[in-house]
Length: 78
Image 1: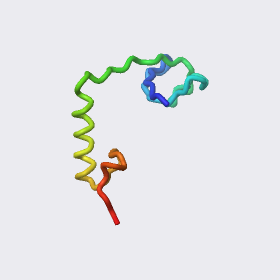
Image 2: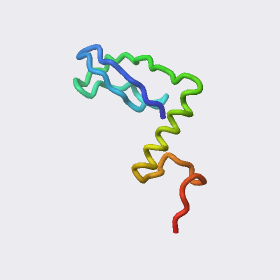
Image 3: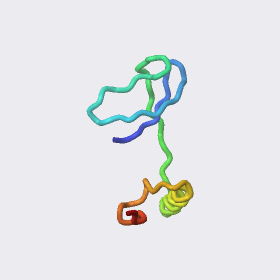
Image 4: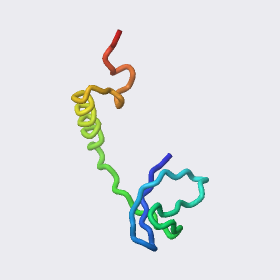
């Protein structure tokens, strides 16, 4: 399910929400208005995604969790 960023036309607040294609349009969590404009997101540059994944994996290993590793990559535990 994609995450979309929105800006409220009534109060100017920005928020991110999960939205399915068949869901009703979201409302502003601050004021309840349905006047939301979807914001454009920046795309990751090609070739940079691998470096981001490596960085996240290093940080996870330092913290002692391996939630972003595939099962085949996780250390074997008994």
